[in-house]
Amino acid sequence: MTATDAASDRRTIAAGMAMRDRRAVAYWLLACAAMVFVMVALGGITRLTESGLSITRWQPIMGVLPPLNHAEWQVAFDAYKQIPQYDAIHAGMTLAQFKTIYFWEWFHRLWGRLIGVIFLLPFLYFLLRRRIPASLAPRLMLLFLLGAFQGAVGWWMVKSGLENRIEVSQYRLAAHLGMAIVIYGAILWVALDLLRPTRHETAPGMRRAAGALLALAFITLLAGAFTAGLRAGYIDNTFPLMDGHLVPPAWSHLTPWWRNLFENPEAVQFDHRVLAACTWLGALVLFLASFKAKLTCFARGAVHALFTLVTIQAGLGLATLLLVMPLPLALAHQLGATLVITAAVAVRHVLGSAA
Image (cartoon, rainbow, N blue to C red; front, top):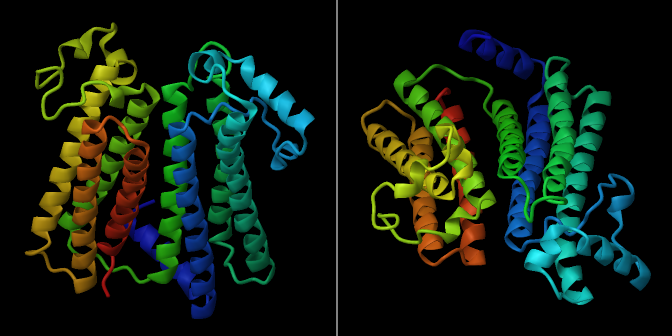
């Protein structure tokens, strides 16, 4: 679909919806996006507290309820004791301690189910009341199906850490987080389309640069997932050098060479640093260009907000590295990445429209 076709499609959808309906649907979608944002935060807490493997079964329906008595808790605890992570990380923990890590994984899964309910029920209501045009309904249904598939991806990720590993696969962690961010960005984009349906082409160079920056920020986030999955943040806690070198000597010790990008902790951390620096430089270039480009005050403010968030995120990343991954900073850094994506999506959207 060309940009012209997409713009025409948006106008068609907007023309088929009253202002009241557009706002109602947009606010519902923004609420769903906010819930996905919280879901990403809960995922970060679950990972950072080593809670993600505490539930060793996938029960989409029955799993809504946690263990309700001592016997059920003991069964869940005994199941956890059978996986390698227990002996490697949590050996000797008490049942009370197990309940704490169980809570975070259970709540993370419960929140995902709640997102499904909050998305599906209003969608059906709006659809039955004909407050959603036929051209928009398939997109929203696709978003719901992606959300349901994300639950299966989450279990696929957890399953990788139950037998021969003490943590989940970094590949599956990156896939799970990446899909969450794609769903989040797509929901946000549709909501913005409904709130700002009239989109005139403005500052095409800035628009292309914003799109490239959004892609770069997403790749940087995925690199962060590999860093987390390999626990690479716990090594080489210095800046700007790593092990006394600009490029760590162990960057290329795996063969074939491409494995270093995904399986070598030194290389993965270095690549994440480089991508983060490129993201900051890209945001700086966009920020400086905004003073000369013919932008509305709203668009210029969005670009400036993006640069501010990227700068804060870079500071959080450095602090997290140098202080060796304290939980509050590590969580703030993950949330900062999601906020950067939020701002980048908003900037890319607003640079395609005029006030």
